[in-house]
Image (tube, rainbow, N blue to C red; front, side):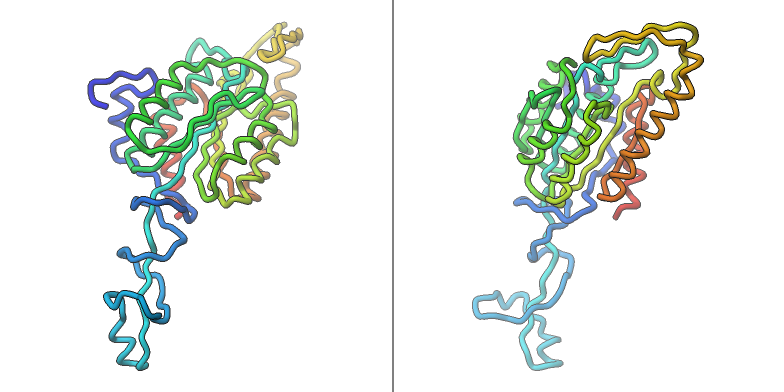
Length: 299
């Protein structure tokens, strides 16, 4: 990719990603040799267990010391290492386009992160798939690991624009049905949805033994509510407006947001889903570094 400029993957980002390695916490399935452990027994370098010899097995893996001890033939089995199927799921609804005078819009920030993860996965020879949704699944890209596929994904990101109302429940359910079991799924969204049960759609991925990472991207104004005086607020997805006295509702808003996020985190903790809140003012290279530092404790 040398010599090619991408809006969401500038050279300085590539430099910051050189030494970061993404490895799945759970067992994964795949067809290529890579960085990730598979549930299948193979003949790689890491010993797993013994099994009895059966006619047709290669004598190359016979354990002659075990034969000398018990006068029986045993085959050494090893953990097979394989590639990972990874999927990026991006919320492109209007609420993700909330502007910020001091930082990128939430949608642009999420695209930066998505591009960085796509690049990392490609560098590890892992297949990457991509979905984008609002009130319907608008983008579907199957999982592949070629360089041309990565370039196509980056072009998709650059051509996407936020728009539409969010219907995360039905969209995530449709997406989950298309994702194979034991995949890694990263979901980028603000998770502001009118359906309080939209998270239940993620149970489909949980039952498939997928590793799910939910990255919540918020605006600094949403996290700190710095407004003062009488303010007109507009719902970016419906266009509805309301006049509020900011000082009198600040505490209620922040308390409600904290409670809302706590419910999401409780749901995720019960299913071993990682949930992390990021602000669009955080340098995204640092956000990636913090995320990977946390992941080291998962293995």
